Picture 1: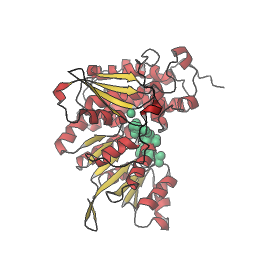
Picture 2: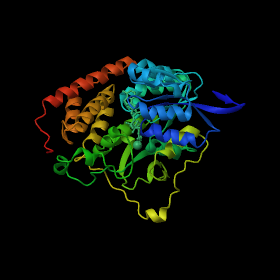
Picture 3: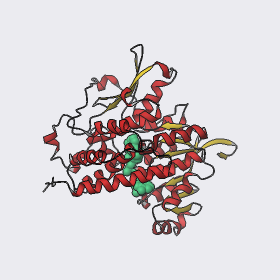
Picture 4: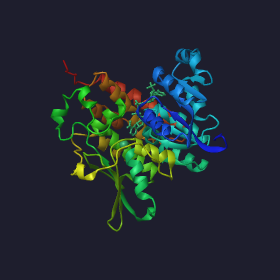
Length: 399
Ligand code: NDP
Ligand code: MG
């Protein structure tokens, strides 16, 4: 707990500070130095950005990927006063460092699970961007959140919107949750058209600026499927009461429908700083520097059903919820492998879902009883996805 000059400041750790969410989080924190104190940061490969962040925020401790990068920062005279640790152990040290009240979980992929879980066990409140944590280990994580009595506040904009739309209502009156999806850069394309889309087109998201993995997930609608699973755990709602509607303007961030047919939604400009700020300052609201929403200039808000045939990844996520156990962990791990292969131009766009479907077909779901079990399922999913990719007949024809 930061207490400088007798004034309470919320101590903040950011896991994944050098990424898109990490940088936006620091931007919000920077606007409110009277409220927050940055206690710890973790980067991974990007040492230059981390160095600039250390100079600006002077955290107690930071972590990087390996010993060599740690040595580089340790030998830098400008960075004196900040401990530098590395690797998975280093992530755990920063996630549980003394003096932090809240940990922003913004590492990408299932690598975020273990440090986020450690932060929960250490009693830290969590601002959760890393959806893979709940996708892979929803039951175990939520049990631990309850046991430790910590707050798990959503940063994902849809979940933040639902959280805000639930406030002041009884959960027994909720009929369903409705997640909005931008539809990504390929909305309206047929399966045949999608088979030849290129990496740079998939990385060109129409409304949100994000890291590369989630940008590809948005183009396949896998991101929305992962969010359905995330919502299933965060709001304790069965999959068949969570719907998705495509809303290309990304102004309505998501909605809750109640039994009296009322729908409550939260709106705002499409920028993650809104949801980040709400998680950081909850239950207060703080200024973000974002423009205010001018609905007259937006003029039209449209909604349509997702095309589940052209974008089968969404359905695979519902199927993984149905299968239960570690099926979502396996699916999410297979997706990470497939997304990396697509980014490396080793498989085509539609093959990502083909690979994941085959992995799910071969998986018999078992209930994980520990994080170690989840990590085993994650590994299984990665191996299975690599095997499926080897047997793909489709060759990528970009050139
Ligand atoms: P980025 O790719 O921009 O950033 C990822 C961060 O994780 C970087 O700090 C990176 O370090 C670090 N990192 C990468 N690999 C590892 C690893 N193996 N171990 C530890 N740290 C690692 O991702 P985003 O910020 O876009 O997304 C972060 C999370 O937030 C994801 O789970 C995503 O789904 C979620 N999210 C993101 C949104 C967005 O708008 N970006 C919206 C909603 C949710 P370095 O760069 O130094 O290598
Ligand atoms: Mg989202």
